[in-house]
Amino acid sequence: MIELRKLYNTACEAVQRAADAIEKADTSADMPALRTALDTAVAEATRCQQNLEASQVRAQFKPLASEPVKPSDPTHLGMGEKDLRGYSLVRAIRAAATGDWSQAGLEREASDEVAKQLNRSPQGFFVPTDVLVEKRDMVKGTGIHGGFLVETDLRSESFIDMLRNRMVVRQAGATVLSGLVGDVLIPRQTGGATAFWVAESGAPTETRQSVDQVALNPKTVGAFTDISRKLMLQASLDVESFVRRDLATVIALAIDLAALHGTGVANQPRGIASTAGVGAVVGGANGAVPTWAHVVGLETAVAIANADVANLAYITNARVRGRMKQTQKLATTDSVMLWDANASPLNGYPAHVTNQVASDLVRGTGTGLSAIFFGNWSDLLIGHWGTLDVLVDPYTGGTAGTVRVIALQDVDVAVRLPASFAVMLDAITT
Image (cartoon, rainbow, N blue to C red; front, side, top):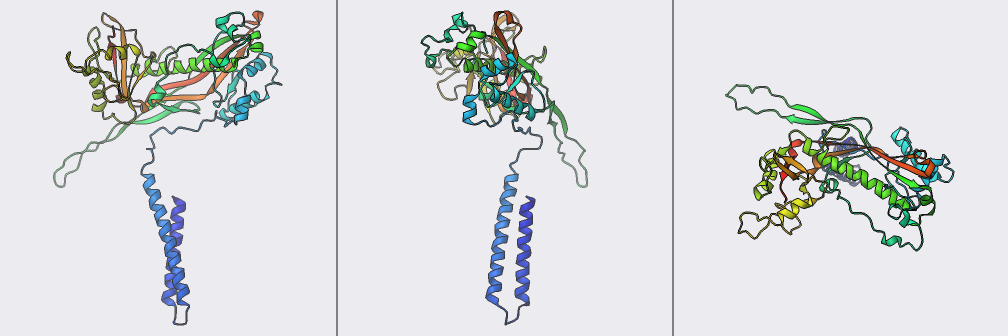
């Protein structure tokens, strides 16, 4: 903006100089040349003015200063395709276990670069976010724990993964803040000024805005796996990507679950269901079968708070979806069900389904109750400090020749505006 103003001012000065020259010129002056200079200066001034105005328009749409700004991720190194193909987590684990990194130069270099970017040392070694990481106890001799990966005539392309809960909060639009350093405090306005009607010569009463802060503090989630020495040496299937994918998935699922149901105690983040100020729709003293009124009630609780904007969606579990597909929308004679077949199947909004959503809740004498979430998922913040930290322990299972691999990730969850969400925690699905 400053540069544009300078250009504009310079162009205006050129116009003025050309105009002065024409005014002072006598009949012997080269009038065509002066007029050409003036036309050129005017064109330059016009161009600069248009650029300045366009810049001013764009500036009107910049985020408010109080909005969290997503920092660049220092753990993403921009590794090339060749390096990504050559990176081996198993090789790094073997090097960390033996203390000999001579055959794992790429992995050591990547960890050192991440450590440099984060300005801190890993407990074991850092895995850059460029690389997909993962978990599981595996041994060669036991088929289900890794033996099926050892080559006889192994069809790697047909590998059957286990069934897991779906991760949905990021899919629903949660805001991810990566590359965080230290505790994070995000300003939040909680109250505004008040307008008054006043008599002639009267003065309005002074009122003030009020603000508080949303805090993000790193909390550590971890998982570990034991890998046998023979498996690391003999496995032909990407044991590599198998271990990486599994570890990463387990940790990601833990973060996803914490975002929904984290208690805020016992080292857990505080999720939406445990956040004060979140809207509540109560089915009954002992729970209730979800109805159209409950579904609309969740939307209404958010709308009344003026928070029905951006990434609005429902999140629930498969039990609730199954029940809603069998529940009439308005009356027992209605052929339209609560959950329809549209792309936005619930009350005209997207609805994500995952068994991460609790189905073992209790209210009164009601047990086995399920949750339904609705809200603007952009107001759910997930903070990441650094990247996956892999600690290799060759001692715990040393006598058996196994290596324990521990994966740790520092994260936190916070609800930026509690009124952006509403929950029902007593849905009967049986």
